[in-house]
Amino acid sequence: MYHDEVTTKEPMASVLANNPDIYFVPPKRSSEWGQWEFRPGSYYDTTTGAKHPDWADVDLPIATRDIDRLRRDFVRWGYCKIDGAIAPDRVEMLRDRVLAQAEGERLAGIAQKTQSGQNINCCVNKGRCFEQLIEQDPDLVQGGPLIEQLVDEALGKGWICASLIAAISLEGGVPQALHQDQGIAPDSPHPLTLNLLTPLTDIDETNGGTLLIPGSHRVLTDAMRSGEPVGVLPPAINLDAEAGTIVMIDGRILHSTGINHTDTPRIVMLNGMQIDALRQQENWMLSVRPDVLERASDKLLHRMGFQAVTYGQTNEGHGFGATGRPGEPAGALVEFRLASDRGDYVRVGELGPDSSPADLAAPFTLREVVGRARAGGRSAPLGIGASGVRNESAPTG
Ligand SMILES: [Fe+2]
Image (tube, rainbow, N blue to C red; front, side):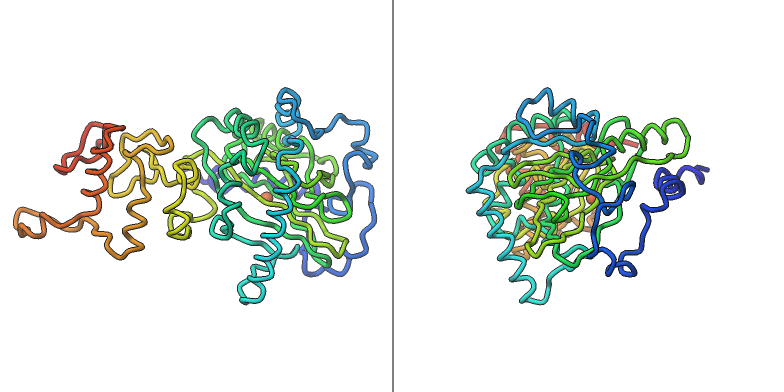
């Protein structure tokens, strides 16, 4: 019925057809990437905007705390730079933790090697500072409130975190292929996902500053909406930013990890954010350590997706009628996960008129969670009452 629509490879099909240099097979060319020099028109052997002949005279985003400038930069170019979002002492603490964790994972034989270096996944389990980074806690991220305001404006309130990954580029690595993070709805008129890139080392053209094509989010969206192929794109630049800047990039912009030509590891934290209707990158529901969950604030739980909404992530029906706000008992899911960890999660199974009194009176975790939520009294209506009767918020046929 919708064969053409569901199988389309656009916009990337025409991006690659009309800009063939964007496509490469990294392992075959790994030896070439070490011989870096700027090549005009290249997407990978490039330089910063200020040094690039095609971009030097263009008013590209600048590092600033002026919210109007940040808004304009983000809409026009698909990225903006929040100056000094993390203070130097906090940057150092984060960097030390990332480097120690990277070494530990290598020693444990579980490091995730990438074509550019090494990634550390599910950072929330690997240091209190990462919990704060996901929360944009002002104790760690002094620019947190400004950033949250910008994310509210870009995604709408209620957004959640897709994942938090430390991306380390190492000498000898190759660039990642240019791509869009937002893998769905490339014709959406506004981003459904964005990424908060936090360099923990200064980044530029020498050490793998993130490659991006300024303004490409608009070019690709406009092509999709008009039904036309994407034409010849402008060249990419290397992002340059001081450590502690937070660079917010639109999920639709073409970008990738750059090449590190130095012998010092380049670290960028990738903190994806998205509307809450999308599936998250990290499966927090399964992966987060129990002790992290037990100490997690309402805000951190919400950001990791532990607050159900009527249309998403309800657990045995708990969450119907919930609005998804942090701390809302009607949608809180963490108790189910903790019960599962303890080995005493009792799920509702087959029941009927012939069920024994013991079966009917079983200590269903659902009953306990709903009961506690009701006792909390903050938030009716609940999806399923203790009596087992669905209320009006539950979906009907
Ligand atoms: Fe990406």
